[in-house]
Length: 268
Length: 181
Image 1 (cartoon, rainbow over the protein chains, first blue to last red):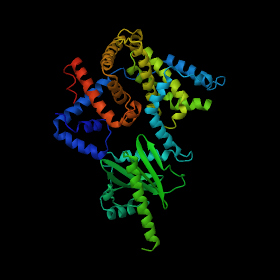
Image 2 (image 1 turned 30 degrees about the vertical axis):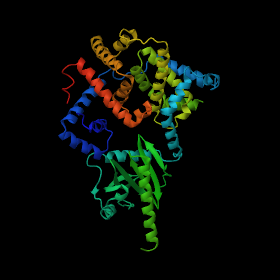
Image 3 (image 1 turned 90 degrees about the vertical axis):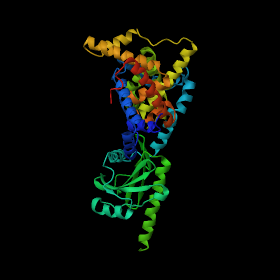
Image 4 (image 1 turned 180 degrees about the vertical axis):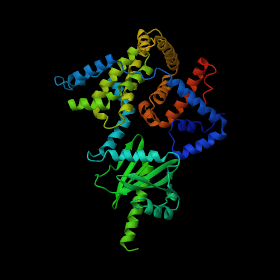
């Protein structure tokens, strides 16, 4: 008699779902006594676990010991030679484990960091993520709610400084939800909102500035960012969806922009 | 070299408290936790180049977990599995050091020890997801990276762990668990 939604309810409790899913789950819990009880239990469990020893800190003696050890390892008299080469007991099995677990994420992130040229504006991806997260709060997602590209695109004319590509890709799985204005890079950026499955994707567009080139992909706190430049606009798609899905939308939007540019060049 | 040390301190040692807390929840005694953390930090230092911008906290916690597993395997080979330590003098010292008021500290210490015993009784894979989620407040994605399992596994494991914890907790605190709504 376990409700099939219980894992989703748990994910909602852990703030691991987007705004669309959260609304669905809230509606579900209104009607499902079991899930309402589950939410209460989850809160009770959390309270109990957090009633524990609180802010436990590493003891000063341990800190000192570690500092001493690192000093020995890092010191100029003992460069990472003999001491570093000597494996600690069980080191071999550790490395196997580390490669299986942390290693994979380390590699993934190593791939991500290659995109981050030192000159790239580090702050912009954070800003984009913050804007994405803000949009997920209730009633922040769209200013113009429409699945019609001919409604969304003209709306930007009065509300943002740029006029980005707007197209509905429902057949390809990306439903146009609407648009929103946001403030980025000291200008009014246009944001086009898509839904792909249970995920929301915000596509930010702003006038390409002198801020340097953005990384083409980045990960911030588990969210993914795909950025590109088309004509004189910078675009960045932000979502918690998978890379394939995010880059799929980028391809579609790039193709639309190229088609639109071709059309205007032919005077259509 | 100094630069490396500086970067290591800023990126990795900044999470030493989190590493220590995690180790304390995993290990059976504070002494074991110290050893595991020290081992983990050394390993992190030696493979610092592998970090390359990943979430350093999740990375360090993953190493702590691996060191704990290695240490555990070593102990198990010695075949004696000690019970959770109830009379560890360092536990008592730690408890009395948490508050100026000795009576308050004793109560907090009792509650803390009860919680500790309860968690210690859970299977390790349950204990670690509970601690990573509820105490360290890691996201599913980060927990998956630390535990080296897919996110789906994190979710189902977390659900089972919470249910198991709840059952134990409500046995010890009758009438309390259901009232929080």
